[in-house]
Image 1 (spheres, rainbow, N blue to C red):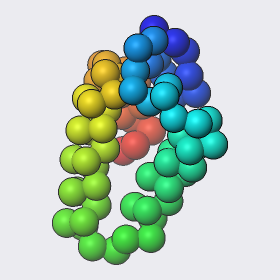
Image 2 (cartoon, helix red, strand yellow):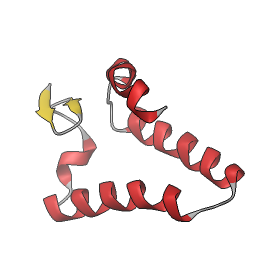
Image 3 (spheres, rainbow, N blue to C red):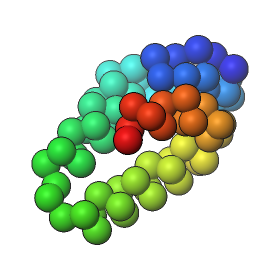
Length: 72
């Protein structure tokens, strides 16, 4: 596992195939989109898609329980 800004990512993750700027842009866009969307249904769909991306990227979802109080 590699230590990143928000947790640990597996060494053989698909995410590391992308350019660092692309990864940073993706993180910032996923951070800003929920702030700009006013519809709760769209935000819930976005949260579901982000969780699917975590699973697809082989990120352990146990890491999220550390950040859950910050999200709430």
